[in-house]
Image (tube, rainbow, N blue to C red; front, side, top):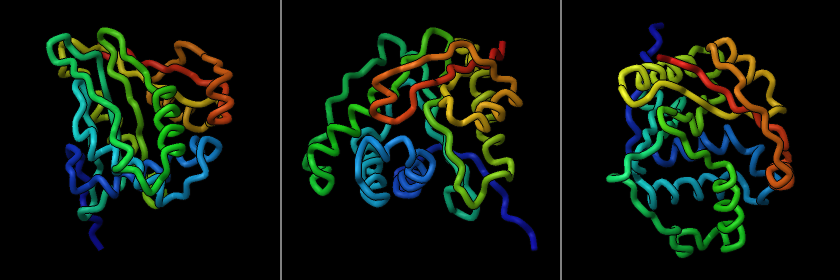
Length: 208
């Protein structure tokens, strides 16, 4: 039996639901303490965010596809140029009425605390997730290779970066195998209170 090929393609609206569910599977643990929403409600939250922010300046989201199914995703961003910076308002609570205003507020605060502002020349991996049924098959490596190629072909970018929580040494080891190096270790009381994660490693990969 021939295995269907895996392709890396730009995010499209038709993948919103699949990617939303994938983000929940990948980051459920970060939001368990922050909110009591179930997986379906968390997926709805991310789906509505995609609808409200279909594209952001200076960012890309890609998906790994096999037989039309999203089996992985990666999101990158970099410092926008002054002439393309845009101000985007908060999403209307009406879009999230099923979730409740308090859950919406907590999720938005949580995401804002996880937000990283890239510096000049930096391409930041905001998230990377592989479907649980497709891990250890090289899909994460394919997504990283795409990101590295993107940086290497952009003259204004020279560094790929990411954060990894201290409680996930396996992920950190994987990034080290990909030549990422720990640049800074951060401790945050607020993040500990919200996500039960106090230690965060900031890792970089110089590509030029």
